[in-house]
Length: 207
Image (cartoon, rainbow, N blue to C red; front, side):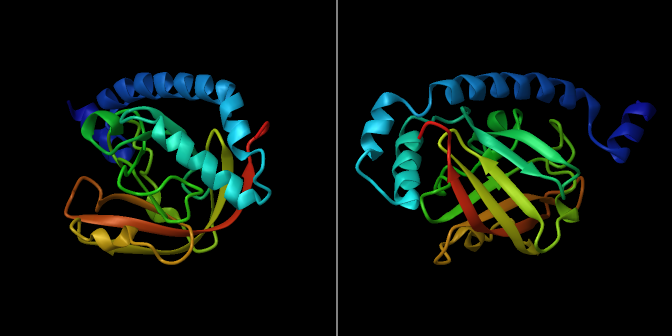
């Protein structure tokens, strides 16, 4: 028990991390299958006459959203400033979804739809993907790799807010990414927030 507490304090809770690793592996396998099939022939036909890259991505994002259910693999997030984070994100922020990895807030848009994308993650349990969220600094890069496009964000600012502050995911007139995690460590009293602005997007291969 003493050893378990020591490991938790030093990094993350070990028992749930083993389970989280298994569930993350399942999500990664599902994402690989989705990426191998996407975009489909129907998706390519849907954007065939659309010339603008942003418009093509928006159509693909809406089509992908319609087929993504709670608990499904969503995409992959990479953030070197967060201790080299590289992990699969799932759809949903319910308990079961967050056991697999960071979760996309279902009430927020998908990347490419032009709004504020919200993603939450644990800091001490189930792989603790956002353990080092407080290490992010302005101008740090965050990448979201979706089956239909890749999105590059730059951190604008960080903040500590009340858990009831739903204004963090409001629309701000441009595409933004918001990362959220409990704060301080081992407490759900507050939320640590990272705000990042979209600076570039590229279509996935084959789209």
